[in-house]
Image (tube, rainbow, N blue to C red):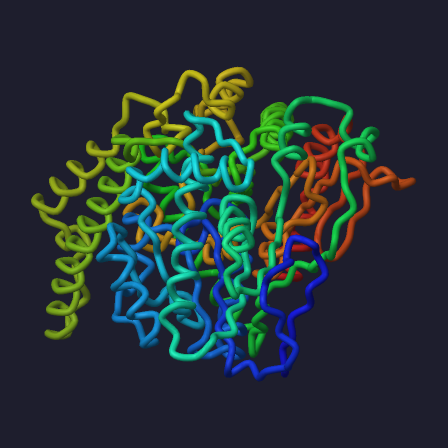
Length: 535
């Protein structure tokens, strides 16, 4: 497929025009984003899900550019030598000039090449680059804004990388640079200002203005025309959809994932495991930590009312709600880690007793005698089991948060939990677990990827205020978890629609009551949907 460059903006004056068409093999694509191998929000999903197809189309000429985050690189990136000679010279030149540039493969589907720029290592250039940005582009940046400072450093390093790569190529290159969101957008501005031979694309995924207006309790949708501009082009969201070869394959994966979640729950609620896991429903909400925008406030209110109704109706169903939203923490909660250790110790004790019991049973049957059950377990076995039981005694309640929060007293979710009183007591039929970290298969606490976790749950709740359909609900329905999707401002003439893929609720003022009504009195609908999709 030939590519051509179209000069349609006055800001491109003075740049060399590409009159002739050229093949993709002669072009190099750099895709630049702050969330390359660095999960913050939805852009990570955008890039991750299309990486395989992009690699298939562009091959060795496709490179992702992102920030170097050591904690992510340790588990997600394999550092290797650059495959491209011009790129190798570019990285060597930048490293010898006071930068730290890393090259490797991102360990996701497609294994794309990544170029990681260490913004912290070049922080000494921040003042100089801010001055240059003001003098040449007329753009001022706040001095004490960490996010804006990172954008400046990342933008200048990106422009440096693209300019150096163009200079190191033996022949005039055809470079295409795709920038995602404003954190990476400064590199595009500098490419224009320096008139680099780079064709640029910019994609915005959300706007800070819209996000803060929604969070600020303004009448957002009735004043949308005053703050919104017309989009230049809309790119539909896409998911890398993988179909299972047979239904039983998905059934097995669901059973395995649910069993792993149940194991975590056994450890988390040790000493208070007075509910039946076979009659336990797993709910979750996940995404960027925006308490009101993502609907966590409404979800908690609904859970509180659901807890009340389950208790007054003496229901034997237990609901465990997971909140997967990243927040500032300093470590895992000691009590949470202890719970998993106690669970593991109990399992080891049970396995030891089982092996000794099985050996005695085998020896008895081998000589042709039925075993004397009273002699199968000796005093030592009972001692081991009693010690294991005593180890499960707990003086405190199971924690509602799996990590130690740096801002515990001001955290919105924790403060709401304190207000509504969901403390995971024995009387509560609704339990809450706040996991302020994105899920990862390398986690020592809950070693599951997001897709695995979703597959093991029964219901996903996404009452977003400003996103009518984002990636998170889409990925949830793709993995065939039941997805209840709540959109506040659909002008529908009915109270609630029930579809094969979820539940749609139109009015914000009714959301908490509707969710509670659906979960309590329509449990047969939950289980019908689960039977249809999961079992």
